Length: 568
Image 1 (cartoon, rainbow, N blue to C red):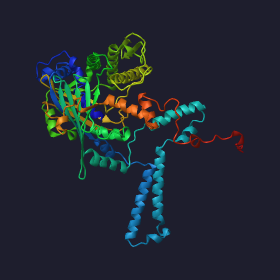
Image 2: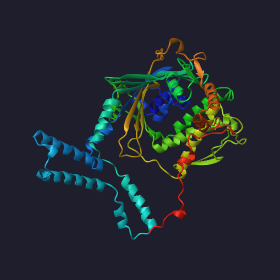
Image 3: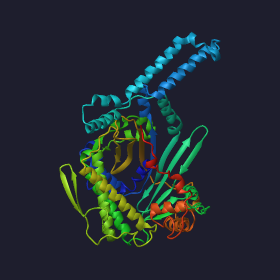
Image 4: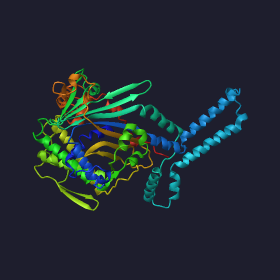
């Protein structure tokens, strides 16, 4: 889930800031602390915090209160569907009244109730008229613009239609309000999402335990996904039980219980990469986060107070009393809310810095995605970046079949980073600016001593560029706590710490699986694997491949133009 991964950034993404600050906070009083630049103070607090081991607990709360409030205050819609619903409901209620009064509705004399029936019809027609008026009048538009040339008519038509479509939709049906209430009562309130774990740099590992629960009167469900990251070796482990069912149903019919009580090992530092690559990669990641963090304007970080935070709409109902007390007990709080444009630029700086660090560590991956020189314009600043020069790149898929390994993962990462950079440069060249939104994400950090005590993040799920929309509100609150023991206490005791004996190397397993699928007769899986990974082919060279249908049966015959009758 996207939101829970934000918690992981406390240990990995935020850990990369450990070398980004130089200012130290020596006075803990609020008035002295707020005389320090908030950006430097936050970087210093993160640096100090991540020098020690700690546990963390994140609670993620979701609410559709904004949607329910908007539906409660908006008028009812007059669309055609609602007109029929209102008419049918009123008509059925009237028939029930007649039946209760002893009237035989099966043999009803319509003439005796003609006035009532005419009233029903008039109300329905008026409702339909209002609904039609809310739609764009295409015929009326062209009637008013007949004097214009055809090209000009269509240009103005598209502009007028788009402007009409972008008008805020402030009306709704009663059904919409009911759906929002039911969603809150039966989906949102019974659900709970939590992420906990430990960050232990001296021990060389990070543990992450996402937990999702649903509790209602007739159903109680709980699912966890243990994750373990070995910082020293560069290995990521995922508990395999949950993934085994999906894999056995979708790909590997022969899997059986091979993944039962096993970890899936994803080695980020195997023999496919240079021996010192992992160390250089971590250094590049640290530098990328540092450059990205300080590329944000200092105005994006401000000192604030507990009252300002707690007064965020619907925050009190999202947090527990204990969490609210933690906030009110903090006298040093930093608010971080960069603009969308600033965030996009920071993302670009991160991608560019990490991209070039990887290229420098693996010269044969010389920039195949970017021109040798490019210009970035940010406000009044103009930056010219020169790519690292070297031998022409070689395509890793050209001479040999692709294998799943760390090298392949890095190649995919480079492609993604290049897309981020391309997208940002295209937006600057096209001079497209992200629209401001009332629903911009915001983060708050509570400082204690020289480190962090807690972190709050608010996100809005929905189109952030449409200010008329009412998105879902997501609040995550992370508390820094002492290191927890037995984070994976629900796992069998012999499997709480991953090792080679209780884990399956995902790369080795994947290569074996693809080899078996290639030799099998499932052409659909062959085609899927070939398209997504480049491994194998949909069918072997020279082999006859029969489609599961006769393609001639699904291709319609083309009409014979000579036999087409002339239109009178």
